[in-house]
Length: 130
Image (cartoon, rainbow, N blue to C red; front, side, top):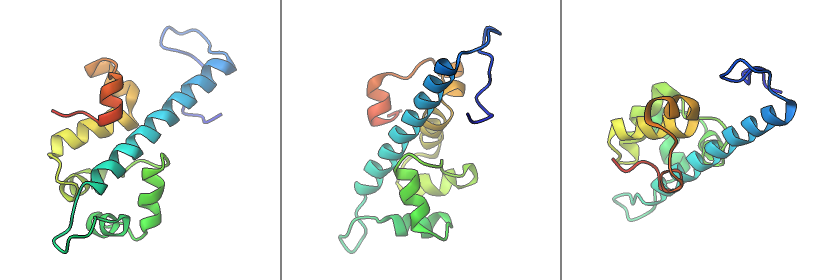
């Protein structure tokens, strides 16, 4: 099990392997939802030539050498590097603060919940709107 998933929960009680596995699966599901949200937002953008914004375009805009990395992000793999959040937001025509809040909700769900409460199913499906 990934070392970042602690053996002790917030109450200081040791977690069973089933509890740790549930925590990992929940985290993966948030990443998948975040990737899906990013893909949905990208596919809504039309370039001046009338074509859809591609993963390759996003990679170029945010300074990542491989569109495969963007594909992995959109598939629920790695998160968007934090130092690229503002460039990614600009590429998707999303307000930077709103984009950052969505990134925290999808990729740092425990942190998001600590400050804003549990996200609703609607928020997880469509992202935060404001």
